[in-house]
Amino acid sequence: MITSRPKAATLSSFILFTALLATILSVNVRSIVQSTRPAWYQWLMVVALSGLLIFVTYRIFIRYKVLRFGSNQVEIYYPVLRKRKKFPLADIERWQEQQVKTGKKTTYRELQILFTGHEKLSLGQQEFSDYEKILKYLSQKCASKRKG
Image (cartoon, rainbow, N blue to C red; front, side, top):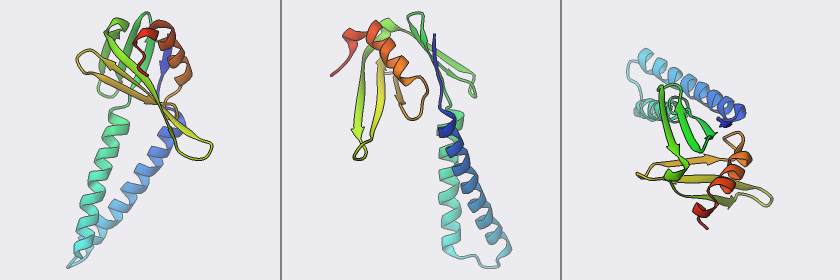
């Protein structure tokens, strides 16, 4: 059984970003509360930062997922939502690995798996652990469904 989850470095950078965002937001809210006539850009900053904070919190922390590959199935578990999805390997319509060159020597690799029912799973090499093991597992079990 291969278990893949977001890497600690990825989560810690998002925690730091979220803390910084919350600090800037609280400073702006405090400034608005203490001011008799707050400037329009302070209101704009509060709205924009609130939206960004909600979006990041939802995408990274609430939609945190643990992936398990093995026993001829793929399991996606969302611990915060207490939601679990299981897909047999027969439900994979196709899968592919995309590589994007991001610099002179670096590339970003992302694995995309499309299941029947238009359910899609994407995981990047930099964000998730055991990326190579998952790629090897899919190549062994579902080689005929690889696109490209």
